[in-house]
Length: 285
Image (cartoon, rainbow, N blue to C red):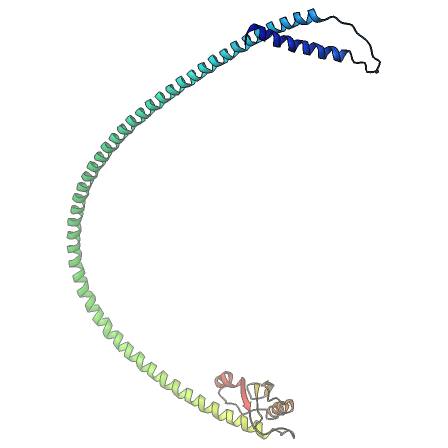
């Protein structure tokens, strides 16, 4: 684009702008037309020339700013690259230093392990020597103790034989006493059993003899009663614990027990307390 085209375009733009401004100032808001005669062509040309110079100056300034920005950006990028290179170099140095320290630590560790292994071997040798001395001492003590034990065992065996003889004699005497107690207990148990059977039969017989059969009772009816007695056989309480299904029959059984009081119980108080102070029987006339 040549200078004429640049100036022509600028002139047209400036002229259009001024005309728009004039149009705005020439509008009457009261709708009253007013004729304004203005001769602005020379001013428009001068404004166009001035505007074009300003545009050129602005373009130069923008190019300069753009160049400065590009140079600044390049400088920043260069600084970043330099910093990155420095950081990479620092990381490499740190890595080398760490590797060197690791090698030194590994060497120290190996040296410490070697010293520890050597020290452990020495300790094991000392320990073996100490254990050997202890074993010799223990063996000597064991031999002396074995001799004492043998003498003690001989004396203890003699005492045991004497004690065993006494114990056997005592055990034989105790066994004889136990046998007698067992025999007496069996005899007493048999006597109690016979007395219990006899008393039970006598009680059932006496209760049945006192029983008054209800008119409507059926054949084969029975019930279970619990009886509580005084030591002489007197009836304290009678309770039907398993009913026959007929209340009249159950009451007749209770009455029969009460009428049979005192019941014929054994004279042996221990047997009475054990078997007859509180007992149950099946009433089945």
